[in-house]
Length: 201
Image (cartoon, rainbow, N blue to C red; front, side, top):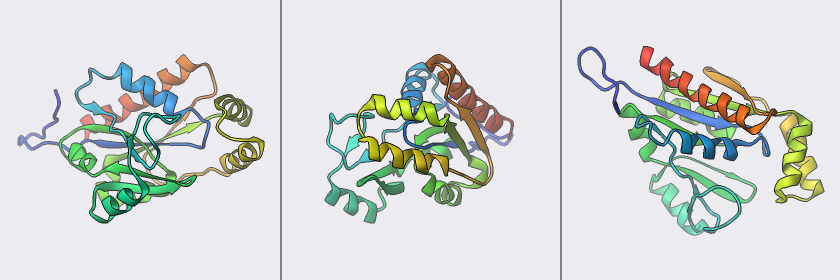
């Protein structure tokens, strides 16, 4: 089924699942794996983010947008959520709100800075936060392995990770400091728990 209905036949709202966590914690890897393994689940979708980064760049597959176009799109309401980080602009397409309203479970990778915006726009009951965590040693090894930052940048990111805190309702913590398969299993289980919660609502 692609839609969930109330007893009177109306479509039940779905879930907006916000994936957050510090740099190097493995969010992209978990999302890529979940996207592949859940591709036949009609009620779950993983929309691509709009990013002011050229196509073919290192990192996730995204919708490339020029900085000047991003600003115009934001003014025109093209994004449900948007933010800036590490000199790049990120946007979650506006259609995500309709997907949730139509009963979908929508998983997106976001900055913790937009969690409250999402709760206000979608409703606290329809937003779940998956906070991906890993130890400092694991984070350091992953940041070094991906080769995108120099030593000073890595230390800055580790300092920010140590101070990383989120608050509010409906937060699920997912530990990703074991082997890859364990992390993927925990991540998918958290997504499926969220969908089960919505179906019981």
